[in-house]
Image (tube, rainbow, N blue to C red; front, side, top):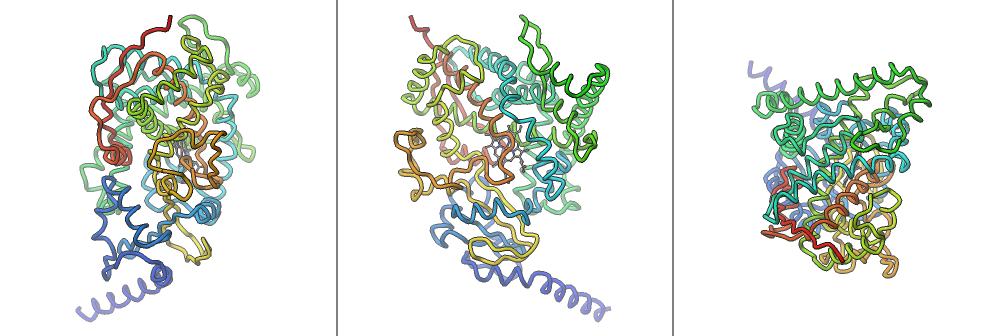
Length: 505
Ligand code: HEM
């Protein structure tokens, strides 16, 4: 018996060494903290928890240089920092998303955020038109209606402090669900909405799992309470999404229109008082899309719609939390933005995509918020074959992390990076930021498909809030703590006061 066990263990060790030898060789040539046998740097995992992530990444870089590695047991993680490596990684077609991203498949199936190869390529090409600026601009009135609801909710606080992140989450969820699927969720007005709770809970649980390597294996995770909670929330979301997709498919079929007619029917009719006319939604574009001469299946459509909500709501909410936080923290910026709104007579006017384009300082301000607070601080890729990045040879099975936060705070590219200065992006100062340094939405072929959509939502909400209220910080929280919470998807601590603004004249 003991001989069988001995042989089994020997074979297992030989197989393991054979499979991981190349990875070991690659890792041994990259600087990094001293690794212990078998467990590697697992004892340092605490340093990668969201609470300390931002500081640790900066600390490691100072100690080990631009490219350094960590061993998570047999897994090799390499952190990259230079714009050149970033460009090469983001444009290398042999790389896929890190293995941990597959954990998202319970929610988003094989949606854009995790698919790769031909599937990703054809779907991305087919979905790009859904995010065309002309289509996005038709979303403006719907987003503004949700912004009005948010303003009313903030007005009801009568200048008392409010933790603003829940309201922002609900408002942005409402706006994205209505513009992407034509469904009115009413999350903002109904705090007990079961769908809001399910969306919130699902992304929180998925991120908790992704940031905890002890829960990586399915058979361990499936025995946890977290798993049971996740299944319950997923059931609610899948039921809603399937119903919305079926409803919309039937409606389009009943109308018996050809794709082009549907398009012209849905693309923006002027709003009549109190009635929301149907507009063309992202879902409509998906329903009309053909790939290689066939329509997308119901499953594929649900995957992509779930991806939009998952990838879009938390990120845009986090960014908006920091927009409002920055307005409160920097009253002088608030005044400049307000002056621009007044200069373009947008104090009371209905917002349109064209009027928003004229707000150039708002653009710079949002750019600086996305640099300074870096809503997505890291993004990763996995090598699937031999490849060369930054002159270094990598074999298959290595995880590469791009330090979006580190790049955005590197003094070689940004003068005084710890200062909040929107004008660093202005034409006058024309600070030369090399490509692949400011990449809040990533870059290369996987660049965020929803970036213009997110910016549109952020612009509309910022103008609506700013022209109605003087935003003030109540209890300033430590920014690193806020950023850590942002990574964990448990935004809290954005305590702000909204004082109604005196009307001019
Ligand atoms: C401020 C808000 C947002 C930020 C900071 C952000 C950031 C990012 C980043 C960094 C990536 C690339 C990840 C990578 O290269 O691995 C990404 C991808 C993606 N984002 Fe966004 N995003 C935002 C809003 C949105 C919105 C509103 C949507 C959709 C409605 C969206 C949908 C997606 C999708 C589908 C992908 C995957 C694209 C692909 O791989 O082809 N995002 N986003």
